Amino acid sequence: MRLRRNKSLPHLLGLVLLLSIHHPTQAQTLEEQAVLAALSLNIVRFTTWPTEAQLNESISFCVIGDNTVQQSFISIDHKAVGDKTLQLINLSRLRNFEECNVLYVSDLKQAILLQVFGQLKNRPLLTIGEGYDFAAQGGMVGLENINGKITLHVNQPIVSEANLTISARLLKLANIIGK
Image (cartoon, rainbow, N blue to C red; front, top):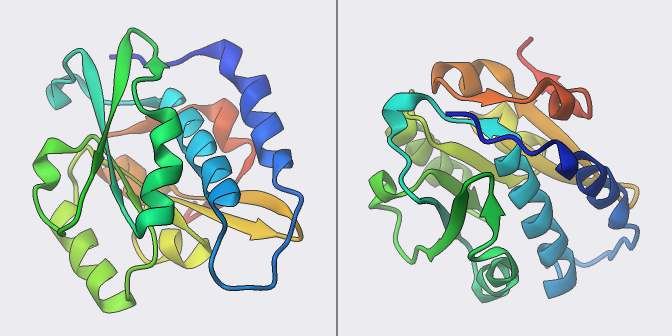
């Protein structure tokens, strides 16, 4: 099933350049997280799931994170993704991943994150998180603020193992890990 939307590329490029404020504090603001949410939506729009993933009328977008992260993703709930609608699910526990087509992870300890990646291995579930390390350690797409700009890190072997396809147009904007 193809879930592409060619009109989204200009929006994606704009979002990549949008985050121009760098805060020295560790915690991200609701505004910064909202930018990551909008960028995540566009990543979903440039991703193709295999037929056996059996996507229905909606794409389940699960979020693991604190209240700020979960609030920021409300802005993308019920947005159109091709002929589907995005359905936001805030997870309070690290289980029930079978209901997710997309999983956004924020601020998990490395040991716990590696356990999550082990549970999801080879499943057609798009994983998005924060930073290069997220993608390098087994996530699919890591979003990193470098000098006020968001850089995409895509772990291509992990994406392929899950039988997902990320559009070449998006991959041109990304740092590819594990070529």
